[in-house]
Amino acid sequence: GFYFLQDDYLVGRDLETKEHRCQSILLCFMVTTNRGLRRSGGIGDDLEETSKDDTINFYSRWAFDLTFFLICVVLILNIVFGIIINNFGTLRDDRRKFLDIMGNFCFICNIERQKFDSNLEGGFDKHVKSQHHLWNYIYYMAHLQLKASTEYNAVECSVTEKLRRFDTSWLPFHKALALEKVEETKHQDSDNIEQIRALEQQLLTQQEEMKTREATLMNMMIEMSKKIELLACHEDHPIGGDLRTKSGFDG
Image 1: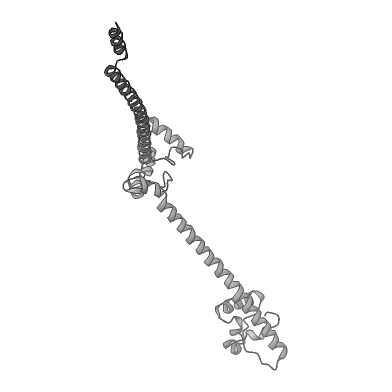
Image 2: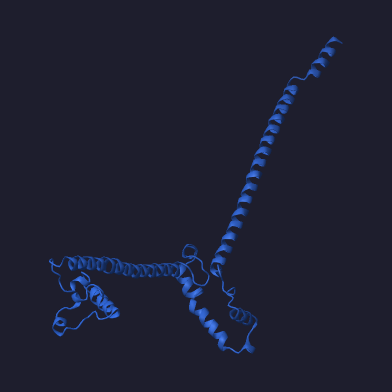
């Protein structure tokens, strides 16, 4: 535009005052970007119309206007807007992930919501508001900073030293007393269940032994009854008595 289309930059009152808007490359660049990017059709909407009779100038203007429109208005602006929109989308996704983490994981112990909701009365909300409240830990750190170091107890000395070294091992990471109590109760219940099952198995074993003994006793009683019947038959028909009778008769 500066080398070939300076006369086209004389528009409106500039034609009357004979002042050029494209006197230098810098001024020409500023006018072109200022007026071209604010026009929906590019710089061509702001420049003087060319006549078809001036063939060289006509085609030069056509190439200049179309190139500016495609490169600056369509391509560059869409790239800039795309980058801006993409950055906002990334920020929105990051915020959504942050809110999802804060809403489903304890900030102190990093245990997920599901474990608290399924094992504790009041669930996750009660845990983060009473047991692992974020501000309670902040108040505790502020208390350590305001308290005289000569008045520290053993725990406070240890925590203060770790805070100075940016060591977070003093925090209950993946630990919660409420869940530990639940796990301990479950462990005790499982031990009780195992004991009950063992006792049940012992009872079944003893029951089987009693059945075996009962069957043995029944067999013994049957044998005894058979022997008693045999003895009764021998008493009713004694073999030895018949022999004595016959010998006495013969005598």
